[in-house]
Image (cartoon, rainbow, N blue to C red):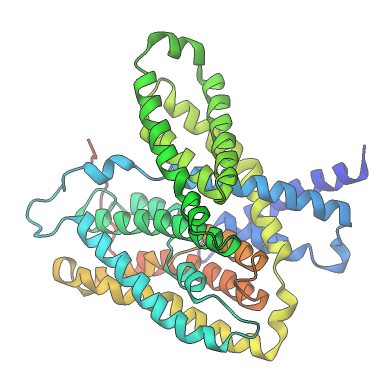
Length: 398
C-alpha cells in the first residue's frame, strides 16, 4: 500500500475515534466539527508530523469537504418559510420580520465595532470582511437545537430560525461579493459575481417545471441515480460560480437551496445519502484541514492574547443586543437564550476566514483568533440556550 494512502486511512480512523470520544464527554457533548478541528490541531504535533504530500492531499480533500459543507448548509434552508404565513396570529409582528430586524441590527453593530477594531490590526484588516464574520450564524448548529428542544415550530423558534437563515445566506452572498470586488476593480466584473444568484433561480424554476414531465423522472432513475445527479448539480454550480468570478462555496450553497426547495421522488433517501457522504467523509476532512492550517503558534504571542477576549466579547455582544427585540413578545429569559444560540457560528467563519487570509483581507493571527472564538461560541451558545430556555414538547409542523 502507498505510504500516503496508509497514513490517510489511519487519519480517518483516528479522527473518528477522537470525535467519538469528545462527543461523549460527561459535562456536555462537543460538536463533531469542533472535535475534528481539535484533531487537525493535534496533527501539528511532532510525533504526528505530515509530509508535504500528505498536507497537499489534506488541503485538497478539505476544499472538497468545504463544497459539501456549503451544499449541506444550503439544504438546511427551507425557501418555503419565506412565503409561509405565521403560525401564531396573536403576535403583532411575524417571525420573518423579527428575524430580519435582528440580522440587520447585528450587521450594523458588527460593522461599527469592527470598523473601530480594524485600525488596530497588526497587518491591516478589512472591516467589512471582519464584520461579516461576526454577523453570521451557523444554521447547522441552530436548527438541531431548536428541533431537539421543541421550539422549532413555535413563534420564538421561527423568529430565531428566520434570523439564522437570513444571516447564513446574506453573509455567504456578501462574502462572495466582497472577495469578487477585491479581485477586480471593474464594477461590471464585481456585479457579475452575483450572476450566480439569478442563474440559480432560473435553474430552480426550470427543474420545478421539468419534474412535471414523466420522461424526466424516468431518466433520473431511482434514489442512487438522483443522488449522483445532485452531486453533479453541486459541481456544476461550483464551476459556474468560479466562471462568474464568485466563490465556488456560494455556488454549492445555492445548489443545496435548490435541492431543498424542489419536490421530487425519493427526496428523503437522496437527502440521507447526501448527508451520509458529506458528514461521514468529506466535511470532517474540511475541519481537520482547517485545524491543521490554523496558525496556532501565533496565538502564543502576547498580542494574540489581547484579541481573544476582545473578539469573544464582540461575538456575543453583536448577537445579544439585537435579541432584545424579542423582549416584547417572549420575555427576558428567552430573549437572552435566543441571543446566545444565534451567537453560534463555525462553518462559514472557518471557510471565510481562510479565504480572507488568502485574499490578504485579514491577518493570520486575527483569522486564527476568529476561528477559535467561533469554536467557543458554538460550545457556549447551545449550552446557554439549554439553561435559559425551558424544554418544550415538540409541535406537529403539519
